[in-house]
Length: 109
Image 1 (cartoon, rainbow, N blue to C red):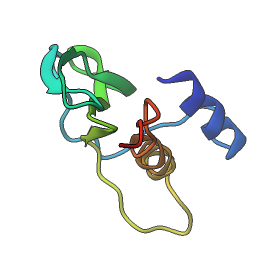
Image 2: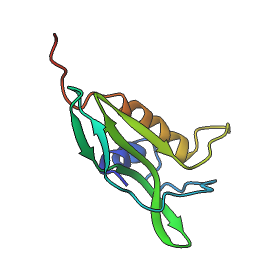
Image 3: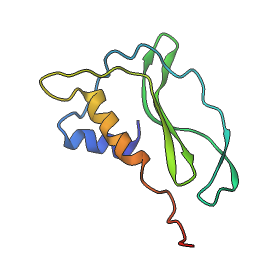
Image 4: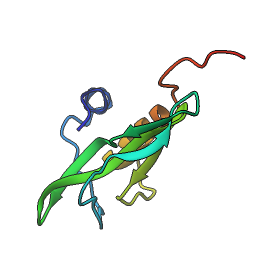
């Protein structure tokens, strides 16, 4: 798990999160062609935010990769309403807030 996400979950009172209803997982991560903030071609390897136990060992459950100024997010687990936010909902909130953060400061034209 991402260390900053882990620290945030710990601050939310969830130091050892358990993710429920993760019906699928990501089997492998590959480097992909995309563009940077200046629309130039780059190769990017997706970042793993969250992993979880599967019959094949720990596998990614949430990943993102850079796309221009932001990121593309892919998550495999389910969320639903409850009396409070489930650990996976807190984690998803954190990642959603992070994917929109510019990785580089765009230069005004």
